[in-house]
Image (cartoon, rainbow, N blue to C red):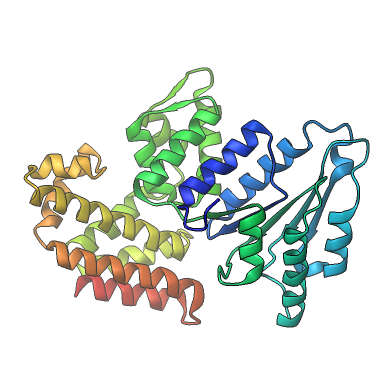
Length: 343
């Protein structure tokens, strides 16, 4: 596949390989979405080993930080048992220290990609990958590199719908919106909540809003609304109070920032739709706002124009990055974010 191919095209190429069972010698699954990486790895494992009599005897899983380059080379070059293909998984190839050991591993992976073993499929996982390195270029030429990005907005909604379908259910749009509002974009948690809903509705084919409200009642929706409403109206004291409540309820800071970002993305989408001639209520509904809280969004849209909303989203994105990287206590970072958004 061409290096310039977009991530969606690469994901489709992987699906085609799985369906046709025409496998490449090496796959690199990487990005900031560990649930999707794990799901892609599991599907590759099942598909690659499905036809061989050897089954699990032909599977070998290695964690890069706890193995050596020589062990990886030997694993890939070992012949499969009882026919079929051999599958070798090397997880988190970027999480190896010191750098010298990581460079040695990457050199071996480059070698194995260039001189592929026809009876072995190698699956690599990573969080961060340098596309300029010759290891990546060799893998991209000989096999397939698939980046799994964090999902937002419509892409996240589409994923939830597909996951519900995989579990045998149809998800009503209001139920999906509520689920995303409550859980955020942590796909592992979304999958778990969907499984709870599947058990909750039993034989019924469709999950309704009432089901989601009853089955996911342990999530603190009211406090989340308090926070986003206060930020939308530039009410700093109300926002700080809501942040304290969320902290007491044990809500993860990263999830709080994601929910705030989703709220401001809906505000900006509604603002753009209104500027294009849509009336305010329809603009809010088109942005994914539930009908029973449209009136709150109408009020908040009076406080900010499009430029201010875009600036707010940049600040929220910076807060998300700082929460993962900075040593500043998360509570202080969230307070600073609230002050900046209410300024």
